[in-house]
Amino acid sequence: MANAGRGSNEHATMQIMKNALEELDRLLESRLSEHLQSVPDAAQIVASALARNHKIALRVFQERGGSLEAVRHTFSASLAQMERVLEAKIGSAHLSNTDMMQHAASTLYQSRPRNRACRYLSAAAAAELLTHMPPVVLANFDANLVEQDPLAALALTRFTESDEWQDAYLAALAKLPAQSFELRAPTFRVFDRKQLSLMLEGSKRTLKPWSMSHCREAGIIVCITHDENNPPHLPILLFTALFYHYLFEIARAGESLARHIVHQPETAGAHVAAIITSTRRTHSFLHPNIHSEALYWEDALAHMNAVFPALNLAPYLPLLSHGDFLGAHSATPLSLNIVDHLWDAALDQKKTGGYRYHFQEAFWSETLWRLRKLWRDEATHAVLHSLELDDIAFTEQMFEKARRPRTFFAHAKAATFSLKHRVRRMLD
Image (cartoon, rainbow, N blue to C red; front, side, top):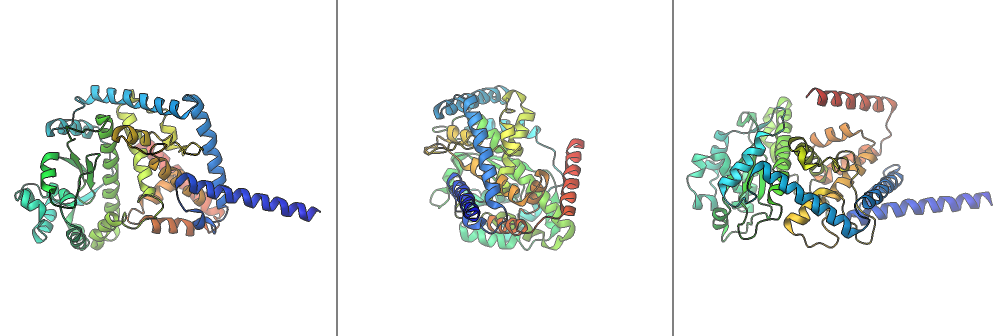
């Protein structure tokens, strides 16, 4: 009878663990459970993360009205107030002409975070690349831009040129040595939407609805004026959040290249090209670069809160910086990640239950660190030193390490590493 009881308990435990993995897949709209079977303690770790998520979600729901509609209304009111704060600090909410957007970008850039050494393509190297590989669409529209501002021209080619041109360009970029990259800060350029739209007529390229992008190898944020007939809602708030998000993203890429050049200067171009193409190979069930995207959003919102305290982002920051990446457990989960609500409001998303991408990437990242039994600083270090890896390679690397038991000395080394990073942050 005792053996029968043990067997029954083991079966019940296995079923609970199986349910936890299935719940993770439901919440993330993924198929991760099949990958987690061979990771030690995976089901227990996932069950613990889900239980914590559920507990905090219930608390936040109660604090913000107790219903889906009440929570949405609370987020909407908070975002509208943030928009008013930024409009008073930065100026006009209308970013439909280059002068207005240049002013807004300059204001944000003056309060940019301090970065360690970053390396990007020099203007001379960019000009040489574009001379040997002249852009077709861009040249037809503005033949002088390559000569006048080769870095701006290079940043625009990602919108204007064909896939075949992009592939050939990346192959040429991958051959460049360290001498083609210079130490400098990331920067930005402002472009007129009407001119770009004319440029893209007849091509297969379209402009992103959020009117911003980036060029990692040039270290440039690409700011595009808003459509005056159909601007995004909360334009200043969306612009500010995206500007700092991309600023952190290109800064991290520049820092990664600077580190790489110290040890392997001859493969500098190949390293940058690998970072750029890392988005091409990803899990079919999650968006690309989930492991780094979550980090960039954390950095961006924390920096916004430091620069503009009146935004009162503090109530949301624990949800971002300490792993409380929430989603309600219901038939249609609602994200409690403020970036998802910004996306919903600004771009008028018509998704059942609201946008959940940022919750999903952040929750999966946090779960992955738990599976690897990493301290927070170790997790950040793992991401920033793996930017050249696509999601599949990165996840496989994490799973492979998670399958190995961690020794006492490894735990001690991790604790020392975390302490050193915290001290350095305080000194910075």
